[in-house]
Image (cartoon, rainbow, N blue to C red):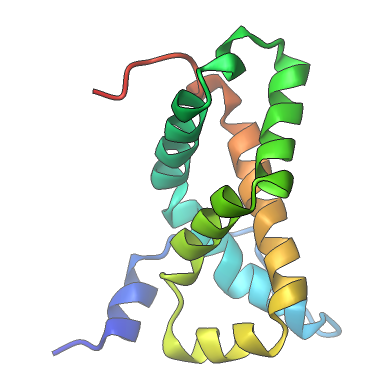
Amino acid sequence: METRDEVLLSLRPTIVSAKITPGMSSDEIFQNQTLRPVTKLQNDLLLAVFKNYVAKHKNVFYDLTIEKRLDYIENAIHKDMKFRNSLKGIIIGQFTLAEYETYIQNSSALNKRMMNIVKDRLKSNIQLLEYAELY
């Protein structure tokens, strides 16, 4: 029987551009080995969670220009702590036990990297963030 960690690792997509090179910091290695693959795996869920966030905030997002939408994403992630913590949970919940142990050693810096990756992922999928009923 496979362990939870083995199953989690087998689900993750490979990101060819996420290279590990000599001289990289441990945070960069964690970002490329763990954060980027987990965030890519969770992409559809992250988009759904953001659409729900927008709906709970009266769908104002859909009336904005592209530039203002990008700012909205930025502000939602940086200023709404409840939303930010929800996003962190979506990513952290996919860590193996060893990855979690690494994460808690430097969670502040890794949270910053994590939220930047999530923010960039939402922004790069902005065309998928058009008004649509969730049901």
